[in-house]
Structure formats: structure tokens, C-alpha cells
Image (cartoon, rainbow, N blue to C red; front, side, top):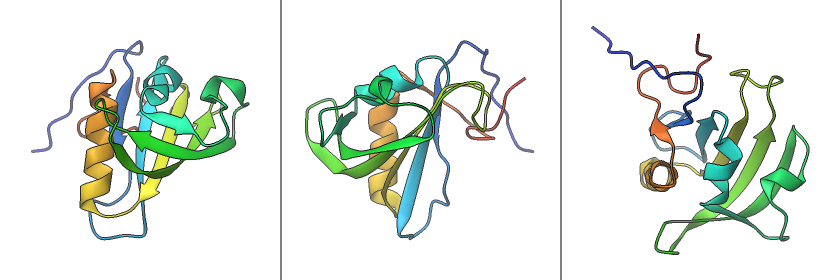
Length: 127
């Protein structure tokens, strides 16, 4: 039986939202009121902009780093603002090179930056 974890609407959660298999691109989705804040602790834009600087449905190219400052990968950060997102909440999707190692390392950095693990159902709408 599948286990589901309940998260309150005020929680900011994260999960890998692509298949955990060899692939060209992997995506880590962060959803909740602190999505941009959490992503900003991991993501640094190549052009000096932050996710707060751009409107919804816009992207920034940059790099993801872990808490120690070590480079994880080049990423594209997609910014979706509530309520016009898949979950109805603020959402940031970090697209990195695919495969297991990089996406799991990126998710680990996002969780350490303050998101809770989404559990079964990933970044699906809550409520």
C-alpha cells in the first residue's frame, strides 16, 4: 500500500518530479510559500537576478550549489507564481542534467535549504 504524507498548506515541499532513471534532464520541484526563498539558497543566476526579480512563467539560467558552496550543476530555474501554477502555490522548478546522481544531489541541497520532502505524490496539488 502506498504511503502518503500530509503537508499543511503553509509547508514548502520539494521532490524530484521526473523519472529517477537515466535521462537528459531532471527536475526538482519546490512548492509552497517559501519556494523562491528556498531555491534562492541553492540557485545563483548567471546574470545576477533573483527569482523575486522576475515575473511568473519566466526562467533564469545559473548554477546550483550545496550548503558548502560546492557546484552541483548548471540549472535553469523556472518561476511559477501562485495561483497560476500546477499546485496553485508558488513553485520553482530547477531543471538540471538528468540521471540519478545530479537530481538526488540537487534535491538533497534543496531539502537542506529548508524544504520538507514531499513524499508520495511529489509536488501534486494539496488539499
